Image 1 (cartoon, rainbow, N blue to C red):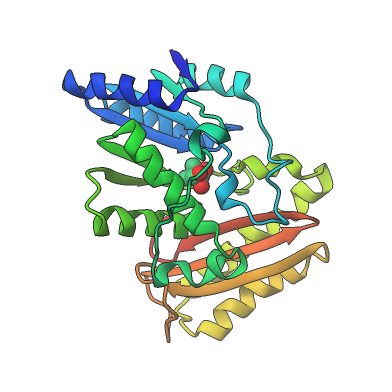
Image 2 (tube, rainbow, N blue to C red):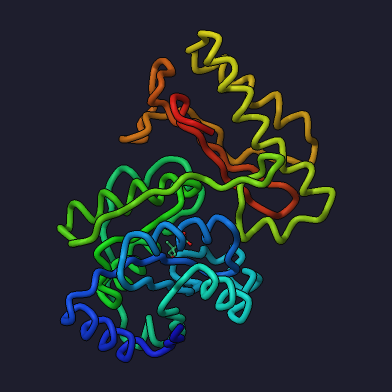
Length: 283
Ligand code: PAF
């Protein structure tokens, strides 16, 4: 497995592999890899001749008061996990290489960015869109894999890739959960043992809504109330958003259907966690 830090060297390597006719599968990450990332890498291994993993804590997608500085990092551990998953090349650029002096370009996004995380993290998805576009330009993947835990991010990347005719197939992979239901996330490492237990209220909220919906309830207010009850039972949990929306447009819906997305962001202490489910799909 190769580890490349330099942007130009990475692009040259990838150009050469493309010239040789290799099919490139790509898993973009911010590192501190866990089983969720491993599922993306294993799937990527099946879908390409060459599997590339990027590790880059992208400053452009963090707001001024967010956790850029304390975001967990472990390049050595990540490389070991990546190698075990069959990664051929790890691309770990430096911020100065990705955003050299004079960098000034952005990607204008549309209404998909407005609700949910976009409302509470202004500029976040622009930062994501810029770095993903840059990574696609450097890595030139045929297929790129993203987790569905970041549901809105995946929707925006799909739309952007389609709108800008980027020649990359986007694959969304199921959320990977701990045995007790907590969605795997690098940010789970911020949680104390007590908070780790409290964080289960997100999963319970998803389950409560799914159960009620399965019993025939489709009223938005009643379904959301069931989720809110689960979260409010944990005094340390603060809801940032809790919403039922159309799973494609992310617009509000009048009644819940199989295609309705339940998405939530909840703070446990200072740690912000997100989770989601589409009511007609497996949890
Ligand atoms: O989902 C992530 O880890 C990041 O947002 C991504 C897609 C790697 C862009 O920095």
